[in-house]
Structure formats: C-alpha cells, structure tokens
Length: 292
Image (tube, rainbow, N blue to C red; front, top):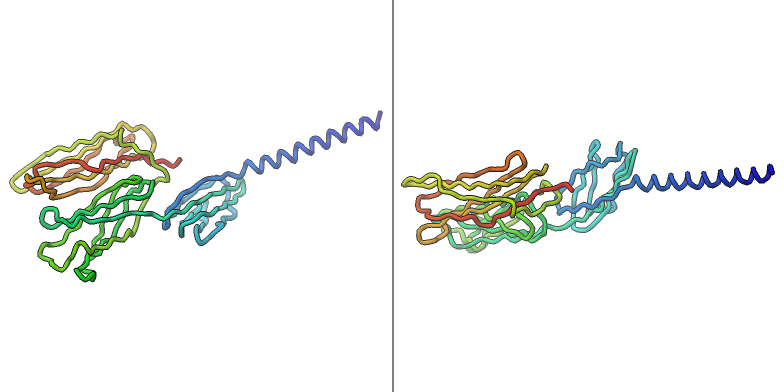
C-alpha cells in the first residue's frame, strides 16, 4: 500500500512539473510581440515598446535598417530598399519589428506655358500608395545648353496615394537665359506624420467665394469643414485655379488645411489680380491619419 501511495505521489509530482514547465514556455511566448512597419528610404520611425527597461536593440541587416535606443524609445531608420527585423529586448518583454523599406517614387513635371506673365505650373504625382503630408522639391532652372541658372524650392502638400498636387515658380519674362523645358527636379525631403491614412474626401465639404474686389485685385476665401469626431487629424489638400476672361489659367494656389474634432471648420484667403474672372477648386483631397 505504501508503494502504491508513493507511486501515485511521484506521478502527481511529475504531472505538476510538466504543467509548470509548459506554463513557463507559454508565458515566455506571450511576452514576445511582433509588429509590421513600413518606411521609405530616409525616414525614421520612433517606437515606444512596452518592454520595461530596454536592455538591447538589434537589426538583422544594418545596411537596410539601423536602430538606436533612446531612453524608453527606439529610433528605427531606413537606409535602403529591402527588409529587416529589429529586435528590442527589455526587462519585461521582447518586441520584434518586421520592417519593410521602400523607395519613394514621385514624378515631377512642368507646364512650359506661362501662367499670367511670369509663373509656371509644376505638378508632382505620387506614384506610391501612401499619403505624404508634404514633399519638398529642388528645381534647377537651366539655359538651352543645360547649364544651371537658378534654383527654386517647391512645396507640395497633402498628397494621397497615386495622387497629385501643384506648386508654381517664378521667372522673369526679361530673363531670356532660362529654358524651362530643361528644368530638372530633385525630391529633397518628404514627411509623413502618421504611419497609416484613410481617404476621407467624402466627409469634407469645400466652398470657394469671392469676398472683395477693387480695380487692382480680388480676394477669394476657401473654406473646408468636416464633422470628424475622432482623436486624430484630418489633412485637407486642394489647388485653386484662377482664370481670366479669355479662360486662360493665370494663377494657382496650392495649400492644405488641418481639421480635427475641436476645429471642424477652417479657411484660407487668396489675393489675385483684378483680371481674374473665375476660380475653381481642383485636386480635392482629404485623409485621416492613424497610428493603428
């Protein structure tokens, strides 16, 4: 009888030990979390992993992605196109970031016909599927032989995936050295404040009205409104085209408005020459940023 009791006790002890080992294994598994991150070459993503005190950070391929610990934050920087894993080990958990690095693709073109007397219209097309808050472009104006004459900095705002935005640059009609068709463009900076965006155009209302006029100029006001109730930001982009009596495009203004649950209405005012007889909104776009 004693032998039987001893055998039963041994069996129970073995079973308890087996459960304990498995519980430890499952707990360790649960403490490792995996996330996907998409970056463009040149971007840095700041992550705040809930791992307790960060003990170590490591990139599986430093040529593609570099990682740096900064207090309770981790800076993940995209170096070149490809993919890599970033592992963050802390006192309470481990985070693994599967990082995909893409190369941003933008197409920039200039309309070689002047608007009004001195301005040229430049269009930037976003070839990616992601939203960009703004894109900065360097335009090198050149002569007929291709020699650089002057540099202009252009800004394009609130450009959605596969979307377009405009800006203009000035060159005097008296400067015959510039051949606009020879202009070269280089994207020098781009910015995304949220990792994810949702198209919100159907939920934004636009209005454009003339507010003042005299013999020299006219003023127009563009107003954008939304009933958004979330915690994030609505980026509202637009281009306003201004035409004269002969229906010639004489000016373009391209900006963006930021809306949120506390500011549901916002507006911009434009001053244009008195020769303007008509104005219209082009390239309407609106997106809601999200961290999830």
